[in-house]
Image 1 (tube, one colour):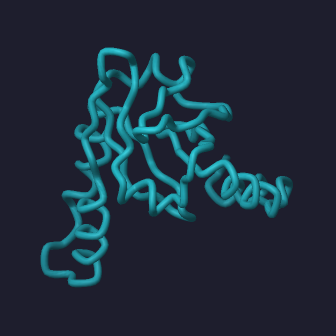
Image 2 (cartoon, rainbow, N blue to C red):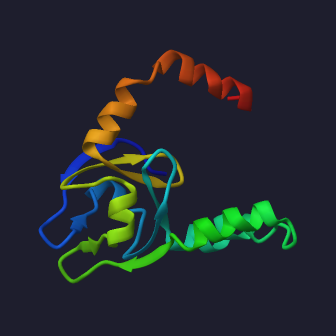
Amino acid sequence: MFIGEYAYQLDEKNRFRMPTKLKQDLGNVIIIAKGTSNSLFVFNKSYFEEQFLSKLNNVPTFNEKAQKALRSFYSSCFEIECDNQGRYLLPASLKEHAKILKDVTFIGVGNRIEIWSSEEWKNYNNALDFDSNVQELGNFEI
C-alpha cells in the first residue's frame, strides 16, 4: 500500500529516485502512465499485469468509445527499469503531460503512486476542500 507525500527533484537527465518508503513495495521495474489532472500514475509491475490489466481486458472490443480510451491509456504506458544507482528515467512525453520542470511530488494513493509537478500538486491540493472530498468516499460505503 502506498501512502504519504514526498518532494523530490529530477536530475539534469530527467531521472528521479523513488522515495524509499514507496520503493520498498514497488520493485525495480515499474509502469508509468499518464494519469488524470496532469498527474502520472505509477504501478508495481505485477499489480499492473495481474489485477489492473485483467479489468481492462474486459472492455468490449467493438465499443469504439471504450477502445479510444484503451488506446489513449495503453499508448501512454512505459515499462521503466531502475538503473544501477536507483534512478528511473522519466520519458519526455510523460514529463510534458505532467508539466514537470524540475520539482516533483510523489503521493501514495493506495494501489498506485502519483507523480505531480510540485507546482501543479500545490495548486490542485490547495483548491481541495478536504472535508467535502472525504465525505465523497461515503458513496463507496467507506
